[in-house]
Image 1: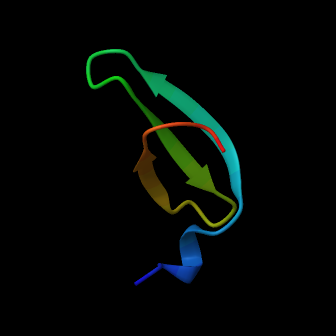
Image 2 (image 1 turned 90 degrees about the vertical axis):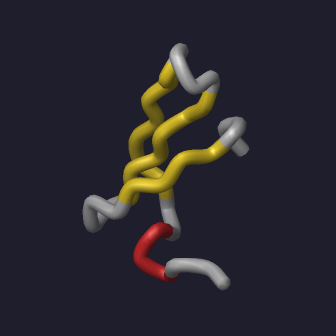
Image 3 (image 1 turned 45 degrees about the horizontal axis):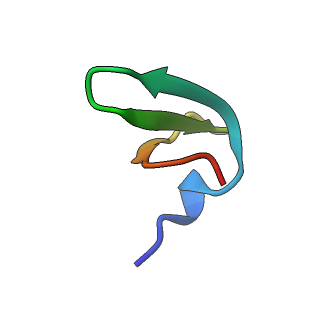
Length: 37
């Protein structure tokens, strides 16, 4: 099930300690992804 609020990443930040990317969408929803698509 997808969170519609998380669509459209505008900002990525790489977290070296977790080896993952944090994606922030237009309305401020944040999700963790393994790679930038």
